[in-house]
Image 1 (cartoon, rainbow, N blue to C red):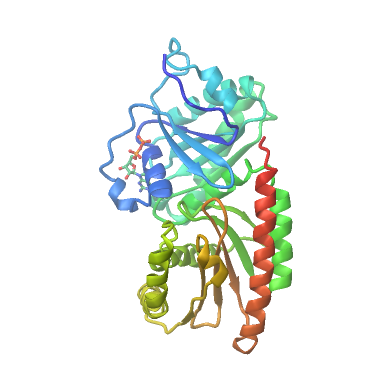
Image 2 (cartoon, protein in one colour):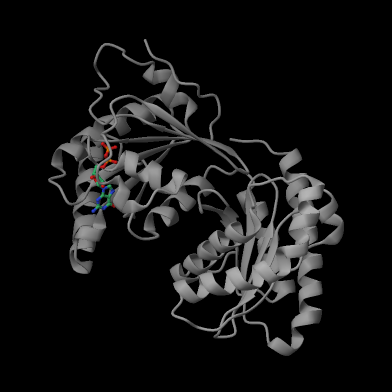
Length: 361
Ligand code: GDP
């Protein structure tokens, strides 16, 4: 019988019927695949595992939807369900979903019986095909039916979260961000730190992003505005392009890079933003900590948008980056930036400490 390498509770199990969109979600979120390129993906026929190493080690296990939980044990389901932190069930909202809901109810019943602490997350997926009104109707209908099914099973106390998602916009990232955050034991402490950082640095919004997936693992306690999210996520891409966030170069290469860096960065950051944001003019500056350069240069990027908004990115540990939006006035910039740098350096130290003492649910 098959087995999964799962031993951390920070594991997310992705399930759903065939063609509900599971592989596409993994490809888009974890492999930066363009949404349209998922059209011709082969449907999943065997379980696959994605590893996502960030503040927590997260594994997303994708099970093909047609597996039947009650078939003579093809897999050790009990072991699997006791070891995961969250079950994410994908429903194709553009299709007839009654059989999906039956399947979901059976899975929930089983999941909570072996793992009462499991987080149950339902993605009402492919909503790009539904009109605005119909989205809410669909969500209401699905929530009602799931509730009724659980009542039938005597499981009315089970908490379930629902998300409207599509791979064609940022909703899938938003949903995964919230799902992942629930698995981070240190989240309240992280949010506190980010709130403090906001206050003392004049930020309007601050995210702690996983650079690779664009999932944010934490943010301050102010509400998330999807436009802020988009701007920050795009800023990560721009910064990666010009700084190679992934590379850890030798010192020699770094020196060479440094010589060309300033000019190159000015050009590329301006170009990319001009492309993506309607030919506006941006003043951009990129600076680096010189002493940090000597080690493994953490990236720092700052950009000012036409409307006066400042974007600030600073690379953290474990593939994370802090990205902030600020409406700082031009005239205060120099002093403000040194204060921000100082605060962010302290935040990074706290993050490192937190990581050392990390324990997971
Ligand atoms: P799986 O069998 O659950 O892994 O499903 P796939 O990932 O193979 O997806 C099945 C089909 O749904 C593919 O043609 C995808 O392009 C499409 N799909 C996935 N996500 C979305 C979405 O958010 N919106 C739309 N319109 N189509 C999607």
